[in-house]
Image 1 (cartoon, rainbow, N blue to C red):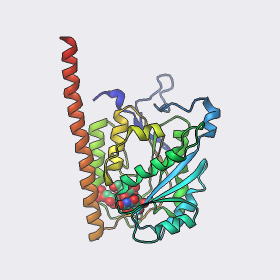
Image 2 (image 1 turned 30 degrees about the horizontal axis):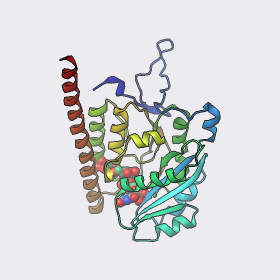
Image 3 (image 1 turned 30 degrees about the vertical axis):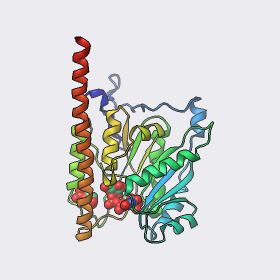
Image 4 (image 1 turned 180 degrees about the vertical axis):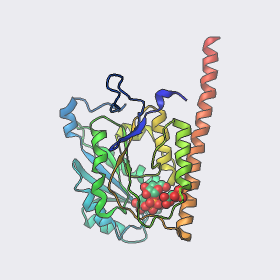
Length: 294
Ligand SMILES: O=c1ccn([C@@H]2O[C@H](COP(=O)(O)OP(=O)(O)O[C@H]3O[C@H](CO)[C@@H](O)[C@H](O)[C@H]3O)[C@@H](O)[C@H]2O)c(=O)[nH]1
Ligand SMILES: O=C(O)[C@H](O)COP(=O)(O)O
């Protein structure tokens, strides 16, 4: 693995993959710099850069209205888009009544597909002549804490990072044993050199360029793990940023364990596809290198 590709880390307030950034003069960690170019025109253009909140939502009628209202209060946000992923409840109407733009999958396609749909709809609504919106993915169950994803926008908007991932405080009632989280963390480390604290965290802000570099997204629950690996391998900078969020954690009952089994399956599918791709690229690199020497 090329060390240049290892660019992720976490601050006391921000943790990034670019942990190698120590200043020789001061010995202090320096802020990393995003690979993604800032919008043409410098700081003035950045002032115009808006943010779209994309909320993938399946059967979130209890919490979606509070989540939408809270997300609308995030600075620089001018579009809150809910992708109703084939809900069987009233998610779409509750979201619309709370002020979101809503699009709907006619049947359930999984979180990653909802994220892709959301990003495509945002692109259609980006105005020509203005910088493309940053994408802030927010889960539908955050309720009134959704506004606390605001700190994810700052490092991306300021060009410090291409991808900012929320670090959540401990969640009361969480029943996980760290099996899926541990597997995802180890795989990301093995494939990129970075060890994220919360590899499954779905609250993430990224540039349009980074989003496109991460597509096609890994399916279902593998989306975050796949995205982090794909972006770091391409030299993008990721940061983890503490955010005071409260979500509906999976408990330790049968439903919770089935959910974790699905998460584990999707994470491993994403990781194995990327391992294979890495091996394939390595072989192809050796072959083309050998060819050029001949
Ligand atoms: O088929 C689905 C299932 C869920 N969701 C939505 O996806 C979001 C996350 O789902 P949730 O059930 O809250 O997932 P968690 O068990 O909390 O999952 C954790 O781990 C996931 C990765 O496995 C991440 O995507 C989440 O952000 C993270 O909170 C929510 O808005 C859901 O409504 C969909 O859009 N489609
Ligand atoms: O509850 C969680 O944190 C997720 O469902 C992952 O499960 P885990 O804690 O068993 O990794």
